[in-house]
Image 1: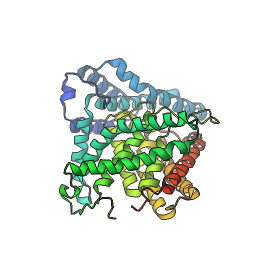
Image 2 (image 1 turned 135 degrees about the vertical axis):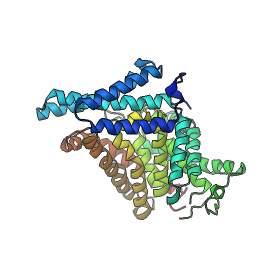
Image 3 (image 1 turned 30 degrees about the vertical axis):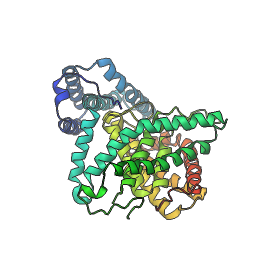
Image 4 (image 1 turned 45 degrees about the vertical axis):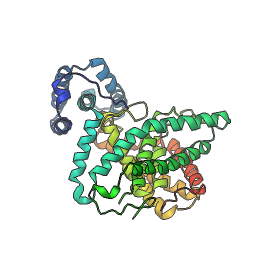
Length: 216
Length: 182
């Protein structure tokens, strides 16, 4: 499963995911706190520096930015037209937002999906006192990544079957078989996991883990 | 506690959300705009899996988008997509699926499509807008009345999705697989 990650040999790519995400959080807060155009300028400068250091193709990065910038321009343009506000304010608001989205995009493009998932697992570990099981969350994330192409195939398969029967416009005819398929797949996948020795009670909680039942 | 089967179901529905984003949009014939079915997946996660598992499924999906998988409609993803002006609508999905499921566990445990529709509207539309509109207002700085007004354009499409979710969930209930309390 390919993510948005773009591999390059750079210092920024080698930084731990936690450092990049923490840095993004910090810069975002600072930029939002700075008045007027200074925040946008600062973030834009950091973004440009990171872009060059990470050796990413500028065109690819800017393509990621296009949708939000167009959307923002429409939103704010509409707003300043109606409110009769100054265009400078509008431009600053758009620039600030675009700069922050640029930074976030750079984090995404330079960090592998699995590194992010590992970071999430670590963060879930902090929530252990409130009953969150980081091992289970990480397993579910990994399973989801594996299941996405599987589900994409199932969606296509059911749609083709419905088209062959001439009922592709009947939405219930699409979703009911799809959902029934997913729910029966769940039984096989559960059996496959348990056949490989997965025991939900193993991960440090006092679960009895009986099959096919949820203890509420 | 989550059983092995619960883990698998959460992951499958999270993957379904991804699959729905990748599938070409469904043409409805009478609507000019084809619908992308991801919020439909949020409603289904709630009505079929219930509050906890449905909420976890949507949370897994949002986390994987944040981790950099291009799972949102149009192949968008990453933290930037979640931080954008419409990010609040997506960030609200886990809460929306949880509330849809919570309501379904109490008021829509049978195959009655009208109850399932009501639950999908409350959880899958109201909660999502309750997350998205303040986000447009606070994060993108759009005045609240404009944010509400602009979002209203999507309500008819979302009502259709709630209708589809209700019919589909009702069909699954009638098929007798996985009643919500199983």
